[in-house]
Length: 147
Image 1 (cartoon, rainbow, N blue to C red):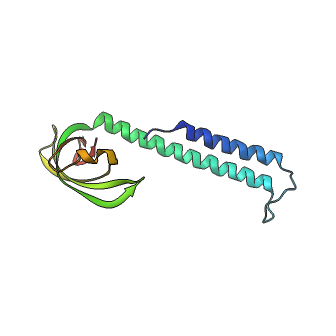
Image 2 (spheres, one colour):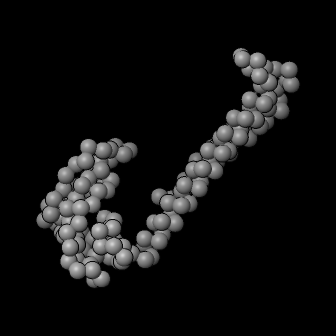
Image 3 (tube, rainbow, N blue to C red):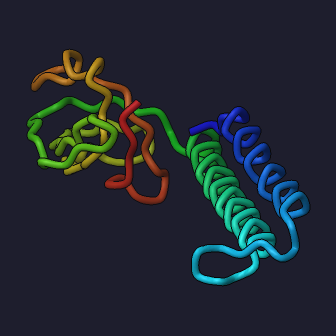
């Protein structure tokens, strides 16, 4: 997953807007429950800024893991023995359960059960009997990622 910098721009715009609004309102202005309105605006700016930092941190960690997998894991071939639905959908994409026979250059031939969210456009290629390319963890043949 790569970070969409437009999202950062939108969050920055909202944060700056709340900060400016905090300076533009009258110091005597209050919210409906009697709190100072300028403090409310600055608090909202802080919440948006904090949430933006959390998102940036999560994306960076996710990207590091993906880069580490690309560099250190090994390409292998796997034959699909079984495909089934798990009933879970993430962003309208199904999470599927695969039973694969993996042929890796560093591990002996083995069967692995693997679950992964797959795009709908890839479902036609993921039929029983097809051979697919996977990335395999060199330390654990059961830890893999379908490409």
